[in-house]
Length: 467
Image (cartoon, rainbow, N blue to C red):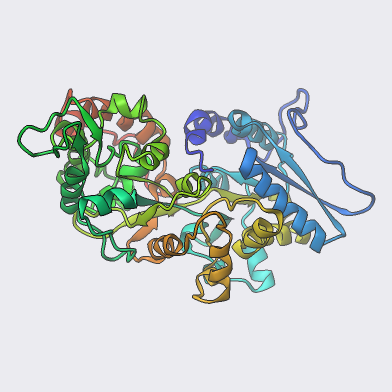
């Protein structure tokens, strides 16, 4: 559901082409209709164009919401356009350069703020003001793309991180389940000690015990969280981050940041409770399956992974991620934006508001038997009453009430912040192009975190934050 790699694959081309946004294409053939799967409008109905990169289950969800909106608004046709994933930003760049942006469209979270400042998306604050809506009173702040007085969009289907665990393996090891209270997670030390207790070789020995055979491990306690989307909130839990909160100084290579990175690597290299990075990318690549099969006892993964377990009817446990010095996490979502030419398009804004209200997502999911795309961003879903009960009831194969509570507690926790993948300027360049390759040597054990990052200087790329 949350395809963070889209930003990295095409982000550079977007930045270049957006320099000319808002003007003409400079001649040449208009290719704004290429690759589009489009439904024709009926008669004299008001037409709203909607673009997305969604596919399979995610596309089913989008279509369900659109069909529901059209049913409730019979005078409107929402013309849906689904662009192949790897072509999406390139396509949107072409449309922006041709001044032919769709009315409502999805945009990767790392690009919304930049597109807004370049005039490629509409500032929605005047439209919100006109209808008397304050988005911060309707949805979580991490779902609002705001810079200064401008609102460039909002999201639907939030993402966050969680600790997933195999309940049977924890019971067998005599380990009490971690709390669903986001303010009381396991410490990192507790997490490591429990991971070692859960790690077992072919003879039943555990990591750290005399005679433990690290070459014959049958169950791993955990896996190394080597993806930036997972280790970033762990950095937050140690009072660090990728960069400082104002985006002017690198923090991942400070003492606190290096502690987190080295501790992750040590799960495999020192504590012997996690598979090597080579195994993690190979035989253990399907993390959710490894946990369900009992080959891995617990792991840190995105909220989107919950569907992997519910679809199989597997009763997985969910809790706040372990903390180094303080409970922390992050949340984010892809943006839903509008064309700069639609400042007076009341119908398009009405559909935008409908799409970004999670209550409508819940109704569409239940009535069309499709999966929800993510977690609620609409505040009144967390009402402790009927709305919340309805959200939980969308999970039909296994009772996810307790896990929904865990995710709710994470999302509304004061230590959960908007991720730097949204706020930090030049995030793809700093992280994907620079930090990630350097950390490969740390995960392999070829360098320590200090050796790999200690002298890293990206001052020329640090340009502050969008908000």
